Length: 296
Image 1 (cartoon, rainbow, N blue to C red):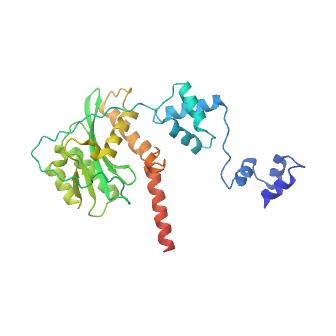
Image 2: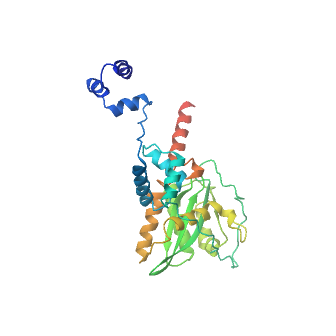
Image 3: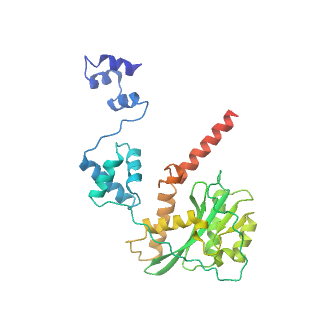
């Protein structure tokens, strides 16, 4: 009602005076007129460019123009696709280029392998139905480090990870253990990986059995059978590793922690999740599940 009164009096009095009478801010009045959504701020091209550069630096070059538009709007600024794309193009601002896929799996072993039960069904309907895993290598001045991750396919969240100087079975068992302690899934979860010796090892297979998980493995030499996890690895190496010299194992561990736990899981927009982060997506899903239970 008070907003209607302000509208009726605006011909006679200044907006600031009317807002003072009702003890509301002008921004609060505009937000009320927009249904509670704050009015987005219109920036000049110089201001927009400065903000784009700041976000580009903050996110270490992770976003191209489509995600940059969404990020600007999420921060309360008016941003059109054409304008942002033009400013980024004219000023040489772009997302880091994708890296070519490189095979790192050594499947030349005599250990038993599992069938490809996942069969490229990358869209489970709930959390903790399908986890996928992979290992990648990272160079530092102190030598190689190897990163193993466990991804929940439902919301593409990294639920477990391990970083070690040797690519032995304990790196994948440690990542799986972290994931299990974080999520405590019920028995029956499917775990999918490549046919590498680490995943086929007795230690890892025993751990899957201990947790009541079903094992699935990609077909030999077919990276597309584990595409979402391969994509995550490429994204991490593309957005954090190139052009940055890591002088020690500790520096790479800090980079990995920042990317996984601070940026990717909680902030990075994911196109397959309606441009929400993994944590935001699962939070919305849990909220909708609770509402359905209350209605029922």
